[in-house]
Amino acid sequence: MDFKLTEEHLLIQEAARDFAQNDLLPGVVERDEEQRFPEAEVKKMGELGFMGMMVAPEYGGSGLDTISYVLVMEELSKIDASASVIVSVNNSLVCWGLETYGTQAQKEKYLHRLASGEIIGAFCLSEPEAGSDATSQKTTALDKGDHYILNGTKNWITNGSSADVYLVIAQTDKEKKHKGINALIVEKGAEGFEIGPKENKLGIRGSDTHSLIFNDVKVPKENRIGEDGFGFKFAMKTLAGGRIGIAAQALGIASGAYELALKYSKERKAFGTEIANHQAIAFKLADMHTQIAAARHLVLKAAWDKDNGHNYDLSGAMAKLYASQVAMDTTVEAVQIHGGNGFVKDYHVERLMRDAKITQIYEGTSEIQKIVISRSILK
Ligand SMILES: Cc1cc2nc3c(=O)[nH]c(=O)nc-3n(C[C@H](O)[C@H](O)[C@H](O)COP(=O)(O)OP(=O)(O)OC[C@H]3O[C@@H](n4cnc5c(N)ncnc54)[C@H](O)[C@@H]3O)c2cc1C
Image (cartoon, rainbow, N blue to C red; front, side, top):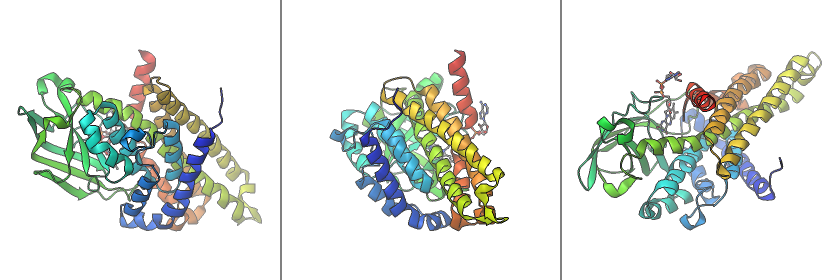
């Protein structure tokens, strides 16, 4: 067993750290306040190869492993979890889904541009009445021979207005239940495809979250991913990998908050000494450090499982469940360590605390992760 990262991993980690410090940090408070999508920053992440990290070079990607991806996700999330969720959706849901299950023609048409960051993608599963219970799809994709007619509403879609390519899950045959669901590629601008208003969110406010409305949208059959009826399996397989990215996001939020709290505790004085010298503060830091280390091991193990062809349903769910709880606990304590300063925007920890919450909700809530974990250990 070797716990050391390779030279290549360390270089990628450093590149992400530098980018986060130099490019994400300067405008992060304003973007959060104004709910502004980090457009220039996403473009630069494309140039750095962060938008298609695991995509094969023949399709314009960086051809890196999942370990590299989670290292980058952690570094970006320490500073800006809005930017990192854009990276996460594009990499683990859209690019991975298309590369793994798409046809050659679909890959050639979309993957190059998605992997280079020229365009970005969105993954559209959730609906007003189908969140955790994703089998209850109300969006329909009726089979009309050489095309589908898509009708319905998707909710909470990350990159909702900024994406150019949308992977949309919809019910074709209700009788067949989840085996009658398909995944379709829909392009922005398709007739009848409308983007709803932007959600005003608690956290990750720089990412744009929208509902999407499909009104008799004609989708050619060549835009279906996989065989007829593969859509639900496609969504579940894709989300299993996506969870590793969100676990890494949670880890990054936690470690970002911890680093700020550690620094502050060595600078701020109370009762004639740095607050780190008060055991109540030192013990908080000890807990944070330990929990973050444990979360990092789970995240890296899940990534390693994926890279080595092992099943990662269980390890990915455990990593997300635990890392997201650590993100919540750590950010709350980081605010506490900052005292009054923790409550204002300039010190960053309040934003990290708000951002942490989403990691317990999207790509499967913590309750759903416990269902995945308990089913896996009980079977
Ligand atoms: C900012 C943001 C971005 C998002 N981005 C995307 C995206 O890009 N694409 C996409 O498709 N979706 C996206 N989502 C949707 C997200 O995945 C769902 O919100 C999430 O899966 C929960 O679904 P829900 O909101 O309908 O909650 P519900 O399913 O209604 O759950 C409500 C509560 O009940 C609990 N619960 C439900 N079922 C069970 C059960 N069987 N046992 C125990 N507890 C249960 C849940 O854990 C939760 O606590 C996003 C959401 C947000 C807020």
